[in-house]
Image (cartoon, rainbow, N blue to C red; front, side):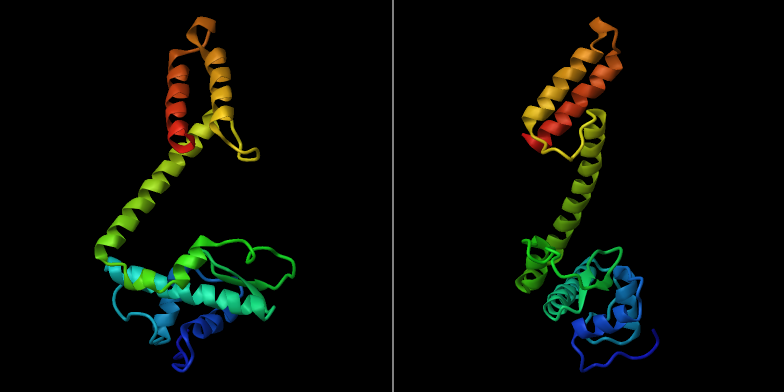
Length: 197
């Protein structure tokens, strides 16, 4: 979008204009780039290579998105899908409970103290925590896959221990199983204990 955005509009209204022109939605980065190209005065006009600038830009955009989502829902105009990979206006559908459930992310982004009180060290900790969770999530999914446990039934240590005993019995070397398989099962159990104990 080459046209300048109307400077009298708040960031949420500018975002709405851009999303209306992109029916398939936009990734967060593309939306930020279009806002900057349209000379939105609401985002820092600094390179996103600085982690604190990146955090503040992201925070301001998501604050605007959650405010916009609330407004559009109250007006019964649209359902706003918010995800870093796809921000999209969807048709309003009465009866969808998405906004009636408690949304911790919404609470976080609508509290401007979180923007004011976050410094560069906090951003470093947030990024480190994110990557730890991402790596741990893959490890956890691999362990659940080895145990052949799905998320359909609630997972707890009782169910995990029961499945562990079944697998150990089935794959124990004394019963024709392999030592390597048993070691994998034990390692998976260690991982799942960290998440479910």
